[in-house]
Length: 162
Image (cartoon, rainbow, N blue to C red; front, side, top):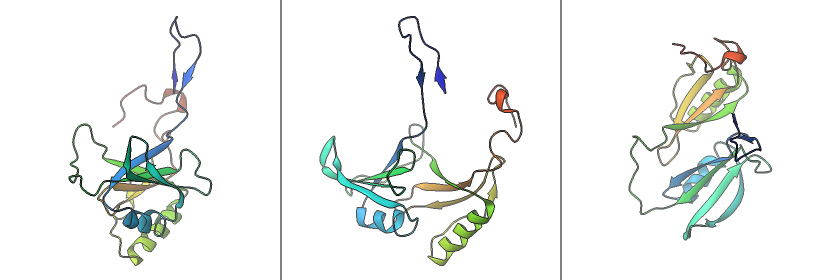
Protein backbone atom coordinates (compact mmCIF):
# COMPACT_ATOMS: atom_id res chain seq x y z
CA UNK A 1 0.00 0.00 0.00
CA UNK A 2 1.66 3.24 -1.07
CA UNK A 3 0.52 6.73 -0.20
CA UNK A 4 0.91 9.33 -2.94
CA UNK A 5 3.37 12.02 -1.85
CA UNK A 6 1.97 15.49 -1.29
CA UNK A 7 3.84 18.57 -2.54
CA UNK A 8 5.15 19.10 1.00
CA UNK A 9 6.05 15.41 1.41
CA UNK A 10 8.32 14.35 -1.48
CA UNK A 11 9.26 10.90 -0.18
CA UNK A 12 7.08 7.83 -0.68
CA UNK A 13 5.32 6.38 2.32
CA UNK A 14 4.50 2.70 2.38
CA UNK A 15 2.85 0.33 4.83
CA UNK A 16 4.99 -2.81 4.84
CA UNK A 17 2.58 -5.12 6.68
CA UNK A 18 1.23 -5.72 10.15
CA UNK A 19 3.93 -5.36 12.79
CA UNK A 20 2.09 -6.99 15.70
CA UNK A 21 -1.32 -7.41 17.31
CA UNK A 22 -1.90 -6.65 20.99
CA UNK A 23 -4.68 -8.20 23.06
CA UNK A 24 -5.77 -7.51 26.63
CA UNK A 25 -5.80 -10.56 28.89
CA UNK A 26 -6.81 -11.28 32.47
CA UNK A 27 -4.01 -13.71 33.29
CA UNK A 28 -0.66 -13.93 31.52
CA UNK A 29 0.08 -17.43 32.84
CA UNK A 30 -3.09 -18.62 31.10
CA UNK A 31 -2.07 -16.74 27.93
CA UNK A 32 1.40 -18.35 28.00
CA UNK A 33 -0.25 -21.76 28.32
CA UNK A 34 -2.33 -20.98 25.22
CA UNK A 35 -0.08 -18.99 22.85
CA UNK A 36 3.17 -20.82 23.67
CA UNK A 37 2.08 -24.27 24.80
CA UNK A 38 -0.92 -24.80 22.49
CA UNK A 39 -0.24 -22.63 19.42
CA UNK A 40 3.54 -23.14 19.60
CA UNK A 41 4.53 -19.48 19.43
CA UNK A 42 7.78 -18.57 21.13
CA UNK A 43 7.63 -16.33 24.20
CA UNK A 44 10.10 -13.73 22.92
CA UNK A 45 9.79 -10.93 25.46
CA UNK A 46 8.53 -10.49 29.04
CA UNK A 47 8.26 -6.85 30.00
CA UNK A 48 5.81 -4.20 31.19
CA UNK A 49 3.56 -1.83 29.26
CA UNK A 50 5.61 1.28 28.47
CA UNK A 51 2.53 3.46 29.14
CA UNK A 52 1.49 1.67 32.35
CA UNK A 53 4.41 0.07 34.17
CA UNK A 54 2.02 -1.79 36.49
CA UNK A 55 0.80 -3.98 33.60
CA UNK A 56 2.85 -6.97 32.44
CA UNK A 57 3.29 -7.18 28.65
CA UNK A 58 4.40 -10.46 27.00
CA UNK A 59 5.31 -10.94 23.34
CA UNK A 60 4.81 -14.18 21.37
CA UNK A 61 6.05 -14.80 17.84
CA UNK A 62 8.29 -16.86 15.61
CA UNK A 63 11.76 -18.04 16.66
CA UNK A 64 13.23 -14.52 16.42
CA UNK A 65 10.16 -12.44 17.25
CA UNK A 66 10.14 -11.02 13.73
CA UNK A 67 7.65 -8.20 13.12
CA UNK A 68 4.59 -9.62 11.42
CA UNK A 69 4.61 -12.76 13.57
CA UNK A 70 4.08 -11.15 16.97
CA UNK A 71 1.03 -11.23 19.22
CA UNK A 72 1.42 -9.35 22.48
CA UNK A 73 -0.68 -9.74 25.61
CA UNK A 74 -1.09 -7.00 28.20
CA UNK A 75 -2.36 -8.21 31.57
CA UNK A 76 -5.25 -6.26 33.07
CA UNK A 77 -7.20 -8.62 35.37
CA UNK A 78 -9.35 -5.79 36.74
CA UNK A 79 -10.71 -4.63 33.35
CA UNK A 80 -14.25 -5.36 32.29
CA UNK A 81 -14.88 -8.01 29.66
CA UNK A 82 -14.90 -6.38 26.23
CA UNK A 83 -17.79 -6.19 23.80
CA UNK A 84 -17.67 -6.45 20.02
CA UNK A 85 -18.85 -3.29 18.32
CA UNK A 86 -17.62 -0.24 16.47
CA UNK A 87 -14.13 0.60 17.60
CA UNK A 88 -13.30 -2.99 18.52
CA UNK A 89 -11.53 -5.66 16.51
CA UNK A 90 -13.58 -8.69 15.51
CA UNK A 91 -10.72 -11.18 15.09
CA UNK A 92 -7.19 -11.67 13.85
CA UNK A 93 -6.00 -14.37 11.47
CA UNK A 94 -2.87 -16.50 11.64
CA UNK A 95 -1.45 -18.03 8.47
CA UNK A 96 -1.08 -21.76 7.79
CA UNK A 97 0.28 -23.07 4.51
CA UNK A 98 -2.29 -25.59 3.32
CA UNK A 99 -5.70 -27.18 3.76
CA UNK A 100 -3.93 -30.31 5.04
CA UNK A 101 -2.12 -28.29 7.70
CA UNK A 102 -5.38 -26.54 8.60
CA UNK A 103 -7.06 -29.92 9.14
CA UNK A 104 -4.05 -31.00 11.21
CA UNK A 105 -4.48 -27.92 13.40
CA UNK A 106 -8.18 -28.62 13.77
CA UNK A 107 -7.55 -32.19 14.91
CA UNK A 108 -4.79 -31.07 17.27
CA UNK A 109 -6.94 -28.34 18.84
CA UNK A 110 -9.82 -30.75 19.35
CA UNK A 111 -7.44 -33.28 20.96
CA UNK A 112 -6.45 -30.54 23.43
CA UNK A 113 -10.11 -29.81 24.24
CA UNK A 114 -10.08 -26.47 22.43
CA UNK A 115 -13.31 -25.84 20.57
CA UNK A 116 -13.05 -24.75 16.98
CA UNK A 117 -15.18 -24.62 13.87
CA UNK A 118 -15.16 -26.95 10.91
CA UNK A 119 -12.86 -25.81 8.10
CA UNK A 120 -14.88 -23.15 6.27
CA UNK A 121 -14.50 -21.97 2.68
CA UNK A 122 -13.94 -18.21 2.88
CA UNK A 123 -13.40 -17.84 -0.90
CA UNK A 124 -9.88 -16.40 -0.41
CA UNK A 125 -8.81 -19.01 2.16
CA UNK A 126 -10.04 -22.00 4.08
CA UNK A 127 -10.39 -21.12 7.74
CA UNK A 128 -10.93 -22.54 11.21
CA UNK A 129 -12.01 -20.27 14.08
CA UNK A 130 -11.29 -20.65 17.79
CA UNK A 131 -11.08 -18.44 20.88
CA UNK A 132 -8.18 -17.73 23.20
CA UNK A 133 -8.71 -17.96 26.99
CA UNK A 134 -9.96 -14.35 27.11
CA UNK A 135 -12.45 -14.81 24.28
CA UNK A 136 -10.50 -13.22 21.40
CA UNK A 137 -11.50 -14.82 18.11
CA UNK A 138 -8.56 -16.30 16.22
CA UNK A 139 -8.79 -17.47 12.63
CA UNK A 140 -6.34 -19.98 11.21
CA UNK A 141 -6.35 -19.27 7.47
CA UNK A 142 -4.67 -20.97 4.52
CA UNK A 143 -2.42 -19.04 2.14
CA UNK A 144 -4.29 -20.26 -0.95
CA UNK A 145 -6.27 -19.61 -3.01
CA UNK A 146 -5.53 -15.95 -2.19
CA UNK A 147 -7.24 -12.68 -3.01
CA UNK A 148 -6.71 -12.93 -6.77
CA UNK A 149 -9.02 -15.97 -7.09
CA UNK A 150 -11.86 -13.87 -8.55
CA UNK A 151 -10.06 -10.91 -10.16
CA UNK A 152 -6.61 -10.20 -11.62
CA UNK A 153 -3.99 -8.77 -9.25
CA UNK A 154 -3.85 -5.45 -11.13
CA UNK A 155 -7.61 -4.95 -10.53
CA UNK A 156 -7.72 -5.88 -6.82
CA UNK A 157 -10.10 -3.62 -4.94
CA UNK A 158 -11.23 -1.72 -8.01
CA UNK A 159 -14.72 -3.20 -8.10
CA UNK A 160 -17.26 -4.81 -5.78
CA UNK A 161 -17.18 -8.62 -5.85
CA UNK A 162 -20.01 -10.54 -4.21
